[in-house]
Image 1 (cartoon, rainbow over the protein chains, first blue to last red):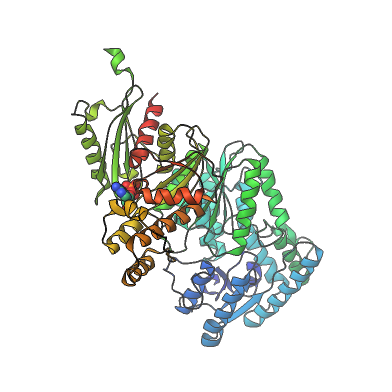
Image 2: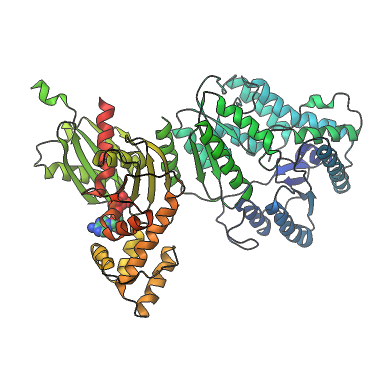
Length: 352
Length: 267
Ligand SMILES: Nc1ncnc2c1ncn2[C@@H]1O[C@H](COP(=O)(O)OP(=O)(O)O)[C@@H](O)[C@H]1O
């Protein structure tokens, strides 16, 4: 009865869902809702994503959770952890676990992350079922299958070119992090079989969207007005759909082996701006050199230092490479995208 | 007879938040006629009214059917279903301004609800732009609210601010707070002209701040309804330390740009 697994939520794509699943839970991702923001725990000039999540916790919208895993990916997440400890753990006895993340790649970082994952497995095991090698293996197969399906149906091995349109890709990410994975894999299989290999036409002009998770409305706007295919690099797309290939299990027999492989694989996935800058910027440098990138659009929801620095860096790089750059700001919960439409269309008129 | 009709006649319609403009244009005759009407509640109807008023001003010697191509712009551009194409006001203001002031490199457009700074390549093509966020600070609407708080006419703001002995700094940029700040300055007996100068300076400062995010260069031009307020233009000149070209009718620059683009599109 996979449907009746208690739910454990997570908030950062560096959280191995495999471990949560192996402990007998169903991992679900907390995505920002689009409620108007009030300022109870956080001031208005604070990460709107953390504010949205805190608001959901305070309103009791996540009370059906068995627990929450917060990866310590930035200061805002640390503050969110403090709020969650109060609203979930103290007041409702829902567990809240802090997963520490390294900031670097390399053997030391992997060893560090491996130990954190071991701790997390022990902790989740104590709350649910013991995390065994068999359970981990099954979870890695289950979650890796989604990426395998996406990768096999893509015409290009590059994870930026998924076989789905931007909105479908976004919706898949939202669904995949809410529903039991088995049913997601089945419906994805069906979808890909019906569509065939679709997206990712090499040699054609494209726009790249990066930055913080865009509101769905922004993607709708872009699909509507963009004359080119749209690729995305963010936590709803390639940074998320990069769980380890089940092949990493080969030769793994112990729980420790599997966790070490998970640690390595998470730290070498499509990197986010928080980790290993150089690797990510290297990818961008290559993209900028290609002839088909027509423009880079950076989505920012404000009050995120990491994404601010990232946008400055990418803007400078884009400028140097002669790639048009547009930074657009939205507020989570914003319904009126009219002005955004003008910005986006004016940008497209420049590059047309 | 064939030759007379060979040159296309086009129209550009700019449906803004407060006013809608129409410009009828042909390459040989230039701006044939134009109009400015209040937008009101219905964008499509405003567009229709603007166009028919422009045609009427020209003695109705041209009819709707004589227009070869229509481009709509402004925030209501999508509602103008009788237009052949919609283009953003950024592209259109750039196009219109560089027709009125050839070689222009920077266009400042302040309308009713947004302000924009646009950089151009010197040949009418946009290279970059910034737009204010959704609040009314630093826009025409902001000045309207302040004018009514001061109980003066919008059209008198410029001449009053030129009489000011000094500029009173207005610290709030938010319309709501600035309004109460203005009200208390009035209560303290601050001369209205000094307050008005302060308001113009605060708008100029904000726009210059936006411009600072771009690679701006001279020549400058200013378009949009607020360019009719010479007080804001004065403040901007001072803060940007540059001359600013203001066309005789700055409010129609967007519609003119749309008509010019229409003319290019049909050829
Ligand atoms: N004669 C005038 N004197 C001073 N300001 C004016 C005048 N006419 C219009 N304005 C200013 O222009 C603004 C409207 O600009 P406009 O470009 O028509 O806006 P929109 O394009 O949003 O409709 C008004 O809010 C007002 O501040």
